[in-house]
Image (tube, rainbow, N blue to C red; front, side, top):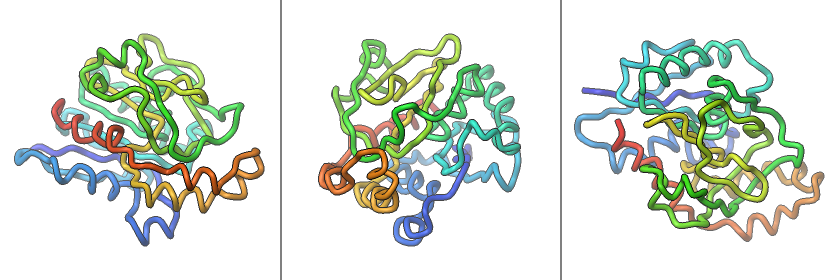
Length: 238
């Protein structure tokens, strides 16, 4: 049986893990209902297990979010970059989320770093570009669509030959395509409204410090089925 590997790059807050599961479990929860019979899910913790087997060993690749920062260049994170480049060269299906999004962009020649406008958290509106409308994965999404976000770093400079599929007022690079079957998103399609709520609760002080109203962000949390559906539609490309 072929496997889709979920590359774990970090842990969620302990209370989130206790109540809802860690990052990889959030992916599994969303994917399991749509998983075809020939495909299984495998988790690979890059921090503990190092570089995964050859990309060709897997039917598809997903990368989770993390509380680490790509710009810190942790050894385990840097070691993934040549592997990700190999996966791109071999046209392996890939989908990166948040840290995974920033790591893929960095691995392919872009720059990921702290966003000068600060943190973006909460359920925010994201809009497709013209290329996004024509994309085989994103093309059926409404625009704008709501998405859950929690990040301090962003893709600040695009890699060569990268297509922007979605953006919003905070981040010009909310969704990117690097090749025929390689995508990444800054937002969290795996998050549920409850997980988003828990993240804002944990970030209240930091959000207030940058002039945000955490209570207003909590009240604005909505369902994000359009964004979440990307995870299940990605399975068609594996």
